Image: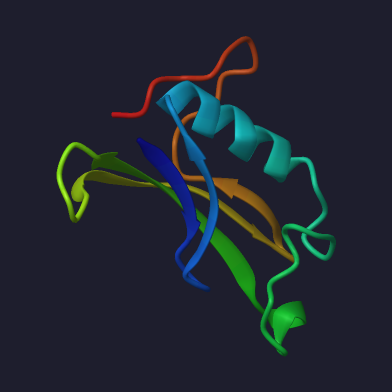
Length: 96
């Protein structure tokens, strides 16, 4: 299971069956302006805040879920979009 989370605000932004699907969702989020939902931060200081999206991979065969990997991927703020993983326009790159 792959979960997108905004670490800055401890918000889950979706659960996905594959890393590729999670990355595709983040690519969609990167196209949304920082001050529009769902990128607009929920805090009262949202104009000075940012979303810091990570992908967390979990082993869901056990309870509680076991975190296997945490990958910082995308930040969205008034300063723009910043990818933490290399982007290739022709396709989604694998995450190390």
